[in-house]
Amino acid sequence: MFIKVYVVISFWLIGSITSFVQAQNQIIQENGTAQTLIFTSGFNEGTEDDNWGNNWDDEEERSWRVSGFVEGALGQFSQDNVVESEQSLSEIRARIDVNYSHQKFELVASADVLFDDVLNDNAWHTRELFVSFSPLSALDLKVGRQVMTWGTGDYLFLNDLFPKDWQSFFSGRDDEYLKAPADSVRATAYINNFSVDIALTPKFTADNYINGERFSFYSPINELNGNTEPEHFPVESRDNSQFSMRISTTKSGIEYTVYGYQGYWSNPVGIHLNGEHQGKAFFPKMNSYGASVRLPIAKGLLNVESAVYNSVEDSDGDKANIPNNQVKLLVGYEQELVKNLTGAVQYYVEHMQDYANYEKSTYFAEQIIDQNRQILTARLTHRAIHQKLVSSLFVFYSPSDHDGYIKPMLSYRQNDHWNYSLGANLFWGQEEYTFFGQHQENSNYWLRVKFNY
Image (cartoon, rainbow, N blue to C red; front, side):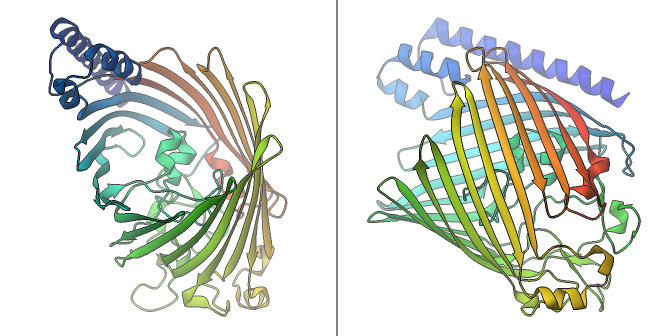
């Protein structure tokens, strides 16, 4: 019944917006004079700019941009799951993006209205709301809610410790939603050939992690032989700040970058063993530093990235309830194989330090993981019909955990308004406690229909 209501609302919204856009375009064509707002798609934007010329009113027109989309999405689990809903995705999303550009600053606002049938929830999500400006010629500031990212990995994040939305990633939402926003201040300074980025988030923002609400997961705390439901996974939040820094430069076509981070593990990987929060998961303190290099090799692009994670609350690695220090390494390569077909591969290894202490202290000897957890990935992307039809396949495989994850996707852009996508998230593994193996019950298929305005 709820889905039917969504469908009706969706068509009403799409019809209303279509009429509105058409009305605005008609006004623009008839008047050809200044308007306060421009409602346009990317295609129409260039056409209208050409027609409007370079008069004063044109500058005023280009100050404002309003766009957005309405999207309906459905997803279905491929097997029985302990979570409440049989569907992994069932929602209607309406997005509005507003951008105002002034000579001295830029204001960006982006928000979603979401009707989520899986969680039986309706919500307003402010995705971006920030102002950016340059108080000095070599300094840019961005203040407010924003999405930040850096690093060289493809779906693998070593030095990019900004919040991620894994529930969106596993459900089949657009990849845009994998990067979650945070309320932060970001400063970028340009010194000779170097750029220095500093990001401060006053209140720690965690990942939107898997908590048993939409997807199940394995937890040895409450369930030794099955997956965990959300009410059995209490988590203590953190209110302190997190700090990230990046320094990068390019020389002879090679990009060099170093990174630093001070804050917490982005997922609740710690467990309180005693005290008032006994049994609760929490975010242990964690600092990290790393580096990356990206350069053209042969006909493609090679990237190498490393990171060292210092688990502040378990520096000796002898606490079973907190992760050990880790050293991470990623090597990736991407190139166009033939016209319109791109291939990319990655090798990732995660080395646990103080492994002997880990073996001695763990409570679950039968679930000991390898000291060097390895992942191989491969991506194939093909574009056809004038780039309108995009098919892609992304595969994760861990030879150390003996598990994996396949993420196929097919997308077709009918025109500047309509876009259709379908895909799947398929997990497998020999053990239910490994990273991908625990998500076998979360395997799902999904479909999205989007109208851009």
